[in-house]
Length: 476
Ligand SMILES: *Cc1c(COP(=O)(O)O)cnc(C)c1O
Image (cartoon, rainbow, N blue to C red; front, side):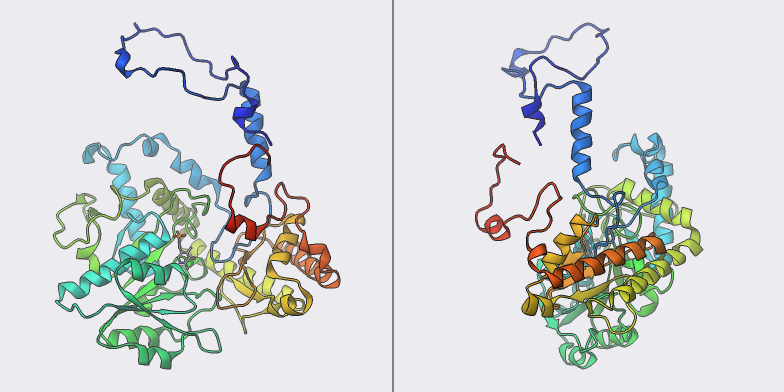
């Protein structure tokens, strides 16, 4: 496919600007550029076709099954986008007087109220722009809490090996050292290991729940108790709240703070590097440390926060993402929120049970919103890897699941169907998964070069890592 620059024909143009009806201002020549900018010149229809062609080459949730584990690439109802495009919300400026943005402050206050209700927490900041960013803010709260009590020796964060990779990275970013504890045979936190890891130097524990194996930590009350008794705080990675929202609350399980990925669970599409929100909620004793400003109970912005950890992002966070989350929660209602979590779990379990005849599933018993397959044996014995299956699925019209994550499973494939898929869609997709498995196992060669039908076929992964071509060369 050619670039817009290659399609450019000198003199073509797509803009129809009205005639200038005011006198031209004299612009000082020192401010003018020497030559015209190098921009592609195309007619409107050529431009329109170019973007439609690009769109056809991409695979989105509107194109088909998109079971990307740990990422919750779910279908987000259009109403959320519609509300977020209302001019009253888009035509505002973060520096305009507070008295002229009452509606927007109300959005922040209401979103905080609902999300605190859902998490069982007391206060919230929307400043962090991503999940990992929320973790950073959350661990900074924990650090500040210990420092404010003059307890400077607490410099260790415990992270189970079933945590999301951002958890240990966050702790290190915060200047903490990481104590990694390995999971028990059931994929859950090993309580004995946890007991021996905690001590007077424990700042806290970061727990991803459900963990990256899609398993709910059934000993969660014991886990938070062990950490609290050692004087540490407990952090809940709630990026995947999709499985539990409205059913159980981190606050009730003993957690002190939690981040949510509004761009996973709460209606903003995840991925593509778009605006996100890693909103952080905490118990009231941590509220004084939250980034400034917060929306006070009276719906006013409160900047007088002497103990704050400071700003982690400009202004109030990605406002329209927060608005979409609020719209999502209000349109589902309290029953809909619960229903959505239950369906996410039901769909994952249904899909898992359909696949269990063919694939080796890691989860013993029920999973939460996602489950993990291992292709370890097949890769060794038959030369069919997780990568081969993932690539072959592309030819069948499905987005592949997450592969090679979590790291604690050999040749992992992590599948998250999400709540909006119907039984028919799940039946069709599981037949497709089983088909691909069977044909791969009977003829491994057939999948080694898959996909054959995608715009980009199997890239040379070693070559891409060792000698990347980072500049467009005119052939794609
Ligand atoms: C996605 C995810 C994160 C990181 O979120 P980003 O917005 O990508 O930074 C953290 N923890 C878990 C469990 C996740 O699934």
